[in-house]
Length: 113
Image 1 (cartoon, rainbow, N blue to C red):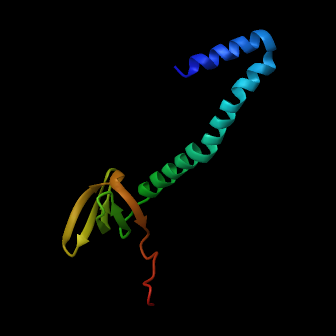
Image 2 (image 1 turned 135 degrees about the horizontal axis):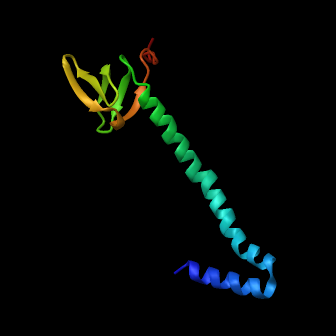
Image 3 (image 1 turned 30 degrees about the vertical axis):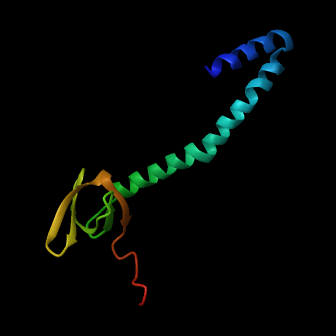
């Protein structure tokens, strides 16, 4: 496995070169983990948290896009579901967790106005 040579190198280095050699061996791995955390993991967690808050705040009148690409206006909501009007007099019940995007009611102006 990948970890076995590292542990063997670290234990051999520790026996001959002391603590500095072990830090020198493990240092690049630690730096890579910190870089991955700040560049990949942390931003993804922040996006997921913001998306969950946005979905929880869905209210009547908001325009939503579902995971299937259906665009509609929210007519009614409860804890898990939202009734979305996708055409005049056509309403579907969707699970809130499947909503991809939420545009607040009255948030966007038409382009030519």
